[in-house]
Image (cartoon, rainbow, N blue to C red; front, top):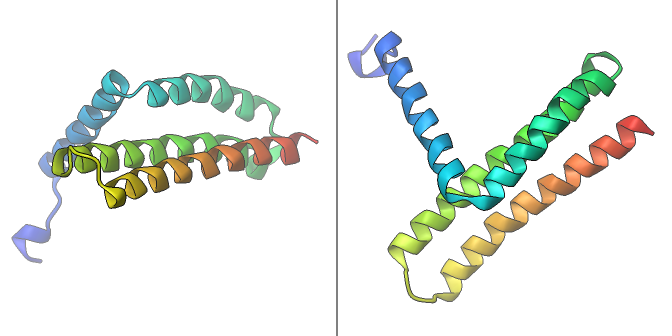
Length: 119
């Protein structure tokens, strides 16, 4: 195995550290992320409690986690766009709007999952 492909404990720890830095940055700089985390803190335990069986529990927990992941990606897109194109640009605006739309669709998926599972 080539040395550059090897992932030992040190590399795994570094990746974990970078991920924690990303979560901390999102918490510190993104109001939407903070709100979605607070909702997930409520929804995830509630989903584990209200879901009947593994599949229902997974659906109720997975959807809010997807929202958080999409919000992180959206925030990353916005940060890069703002860095590369600080002045208004139609394509930059479109990229940011599409990232926001992805988060919105996952919020709708979360709501639909909860309605369908708990009906």
